[in-house]
Image (cartoon, rainbow, N blue to C red):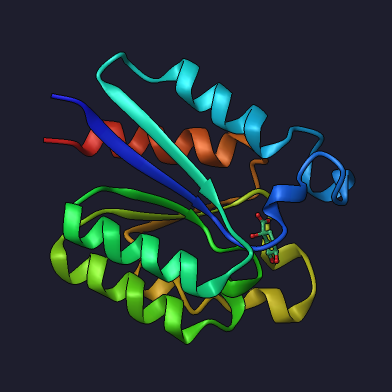
Length: 147
Ligand code: DQA
């Protein structure tokens, strides 16, 4: 049976590669997705998506709740203020579906507004500051934890 992992990405992450490479690195999101797909076993499918739209991202979280699919989520700027996204993520927690919050950068070394995550309180865990490896570490954990 194939295990699917949803790797969801919020606003401006479609611009990786050219967006502040000194902060976020030079890999594009497609590069990150290809790296993840290449690193997982054959029975694992990486379903990587990106949107700048809060409603679309929330819809994908609802889908993950209903399908019981583990989620690796980089909420990007929504991290810091989207109570709507947090409320969606809380449904994952309640359903016992793993949610790993990831960030390329370490928000705690940056502007004060980035020091608050409204998502972390309902995430299973948080991985931040390791560039694209944050995603790889998160996927690795999801695979280790699958029963
Ligand atoms: C980010 C950190 C956020 O503060 C920022 O808004 C992003 C990317 C990261 O991956 O480091 O868009 O989530």
